[in-house]
Image (cartoon, rainbow, N blue to C red; front, side, top):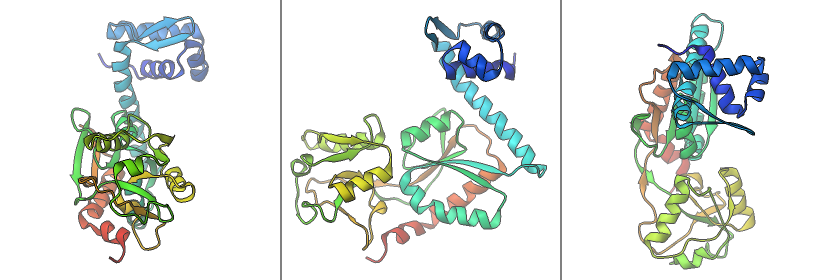
Length: 311
């Protein structure tokens, strides 16, 4: 039996608010009415969806499964309505794009420029984040497309196209840093400096951990954890911190950053940008057009020359 969209809306509200009373306020319902709605949904799926506590409600294992699917259902419904409105000339085509910082800097400008010139009615909602966040948003149906180095493919995520490979990440300082002029640095030399990195649990942080572990060196003490590329760059340039970035984000004669000469081999790996969508999802017309432009930009390889400059 198909789920009633009103039951799904009520379920999502309770799951997001964590209590019946707050969810009832959001939905403009009485608490008894919302309670009856949730009980009706639990009867329909044949399992308890929430654990009741004095302080609120938490999802059961069954509720977690439904939450993933309910978010996708809600997203697909909104996408369908938006596309129909766009076809009728009432609304504008929209694209929800998730993208890692490096791709946002080198791929996004030419793609947006061509889309604006060819399809001026299209509106973009761009989420710049780390791969871990983009994967979650894609699975939950919050993004149409995601551009990243690597997302876990499988039942929920599908890779549509991959571009040419280029250098992966390396250790980075400002050109004014005392270590910038030194050659043949060891991991021990750089480990003692102040570091800014993404939080534990992110793929970027895992790469740094793996490099130090592979060479038998303790990890550096990370003074600042952030997912903001802007904050990372500012701390490296102005506060003498070290970090781990792909060369395309800082190379060029005028760049204030430099890749440190660390003697341990295999610090860099070859990587390529890829475009992902949620598996078995149907792209809107606007998202399909954006995919074509992203594919064209990836396959051209022009972003590699543009970001590196002469030499």
